[in-house]
Length: 289
Length: 331
Image 1 (tube, rainbow over the protein chains, first blue to last red):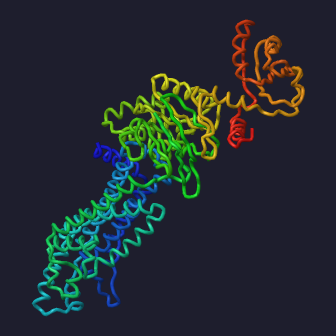
Image 2 (image 1 turned 45 degrees about the vertical axis):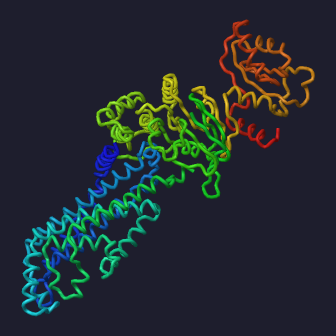
Image 3 (image 1 turned 180 degrees about the vertical axis):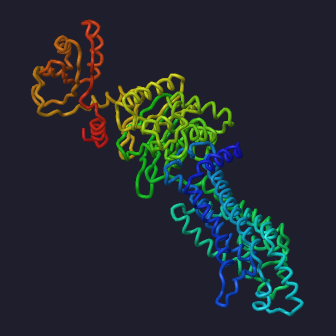
């Protein structure tokens, strides 16, 4: 019954959210990365040489993490606040488990929109990448400057990772897992501080990004760290060949399933806490007072 | 069915409900009070959306806070509007019905039935944003009755309804009651509530001023006789010529003179006045109950037809000011 009600909410919310403004917002987010790639690909530097993105996997990771973050910020954070503000919460909260099922259904709707938006963005970006030839040697030879045998290994790895197909299948699972995990955290934040949810979610995003790059235990609590490791491992990019100052920050030797499990646990914990708050706190609109 | 024991609800320093105690058996109840008197807070306590700060609430023998299963026995039609403008009444009511726990086909059946009951079948596939206020009220009622709850709670259900809509709503509520269900109807307009002949709960500033049948409340008021100044009756019984404490009743019937003559026989009648156009009789009495007893007897004996009967304190404001005086010990 719990699942049925949650799915009923998801279906209702998804059909309700098919509005011009929602679709337009989604398209703007989806087109951001491919448009940026096109702009970079078609511009030339002062010497008349076309600009290169030596590492599209990383660039697209950043672009899509940003798009994902914005999507879930817009759609997951206000799931309860929008109902309180719209004064429709009282209809949902007098249904048996209505508060929980409607919140979870709206959470799934936010995840669905985030996944659709970022998948569209990723697919379009990969098509753009397939149109251009990316030269990794410039980056490897001029920025990293490793010994020749290592440089060869890095070049091969990067060339492989720069394949549009590899980028797609490396980033796609990250976007799905990231959408579930970030949405869960933002729904939780939205329930804890429903009037300032978005502000706290942005602060969380900044702190989480900074912590994910710290070479310390705390990064294992961040979503970004686990997503990065999953992306690197699915692209078969061996970062151990990079200098330690890069490789230590980017990844660990932990198996991919550990990172997936960690993300699922983070998601479950935050959704569980969200349900706990719904159960234990009074959510009322000012007019009801 | 509903039990409140010394219930108070504070919103910070604001007192939403103040020391309310009552026991309600199944039936019809009118929750009356001016805006901000605590009606919605009381409803939220009944539906388990709020936890009392002090005291205890029991609905169907259980504390409603956190008892999710119990909510399937309650239908709530809140005062707030339906603000999902881009969905149809059918989609919205169907979704609300599915949230009760019905499967797809049963929810659909119940949705169609509820929308037909409130007269929304023709417009149910149009977007709610295009509805009139009355249509939105009826849609709200449909989501509340679709699962046929044992207790239907309606907060200002007559808002935005035209006279025909009000009549239809009243008829619907009477049918609902006739099926053995219970209704709590919150309003700040007395005559709207009286239509379904409920027991009354009168709230003001979060306090329950009075609770009982309309007759019981009228008796309380009639026993606390009002001081009426400057209304010198045309016919006054000896001993009542000076300023006296009386309750005034206004009556319209097919022969006001006969009625006046018969009423004058009663020792409880202290003044009688017939309006200049001779259509209305004003009766001053020290016992409203006595008049209630006399009127049917006179009507039968003299074959009188009654068109209107109202008291001077029939308006909610007057009723509340009278009850507030009693509450403060001023009368």
